[in-house]
Length: 107
Image 1 (cartoon, rainbow, N blue to C red):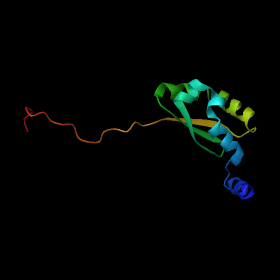
Image 2: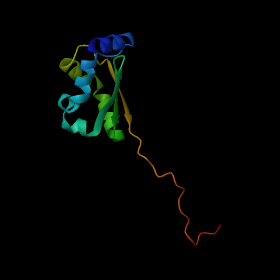
Image 3: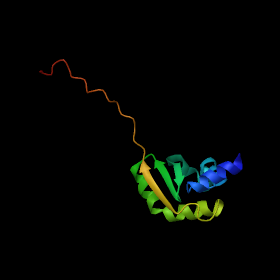
Image 4: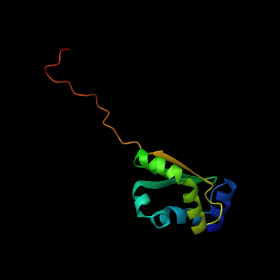
């Protein structure tokens, strides 16, 4: 089964499953608790690691640190696994109901 999965991921230009598992399951030990508290890996395809962060300030910081993050992850997993890092800010779920009108608001 593992051999089949490896062949499929290579054919689709995906990372080795064991390398993916190392990044996703050991995220905190790779990047540290502070970054891990605010950023989570969402995908790794074609050498592009996509991170979701909880605040725009973290997005800016991690974009600035993207080369350092790639080096750290590559040295702990496999060389060339992460070639670039893309960061996006998680959208908060919003209450989609229209605002309530007060009883004294004219129609």
